[in-house]
Amino acid sequence: MAATATSVPTVALYVIGLALVAVALAVLIVFLVVTATGGHLRDLVGNASWGDNLTAAPFLVLMVAAAPLFLAEYQRRGAWTSRDRGFFQGGSNVVLLRPLGVGARLLWLAATVVVWGILLVLPVWLAVWHGWFDGARDEFWMLSVFYGFVAAGFCGAILGSLLKVATYDRLAARFGAGIVHGSVSQIGWRMLSYQFRLELWFAFVSAGALGTLPAVYRSAARYCGDSVTGCVFRVDDTWLAWVLWIAAIAAALALVGILNAWRSGKSLYSLESVS
Image (cartoon, rainbow, N blue to C red):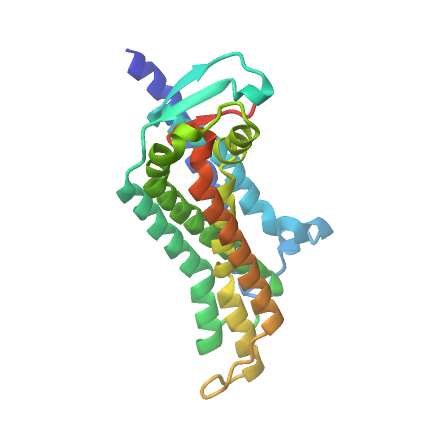
């Protein structure tokens, strides 16, 4: 009976989250079609000036969708506990999760690569080599690059998660005896890595930046005009340098965080609230 009782809200959360994801994807597809055919996003809202900000609408819907989806996963795979704690004593809500298999992580990784390819690589290839999207608005490429960045970023976060799974327990077993609970180091790593998973955010930024390289390629090809056959592309060195530097710095910070996350003194498969 208990399992049945908890499954009802879990399914409801999945339905709500997946419905919001479907809405976000539908809105993004509409935006891409409208701007690819020469329309403006503001045309969708009666030419109101705030329509120029609609680029972020699908992303905001996805962020809202993340709340019920994460809660559903925590209920499906986790065991919850609550306690009275001070701010620096750890969160009052803790969930211990059943680990997600490597196969499932690899499947999600493949899915993010496919989405990135559809959103950015494919449009760039069609534009450069087949002359598609000549009449597309700049908003089309803003959408393509931004959501390509997001898809590639999730790919990086999953890769970071795989590396963390492969190293965390080994490092904790080897060096964990030296952790001083309540020390500045332990509290700091607990907040940065255990509570906020900051190293995975850096992995997200690194891969996301690299994911925008097709846009650099398209920009380089535009110097060739209507014919790219036999043309030497002119890469914007400044743009390329910014992308590579951001990716490298974020990757370095992600690697440092992943290899030191064990210093939090907590299980890799548990989470806690900030307060």
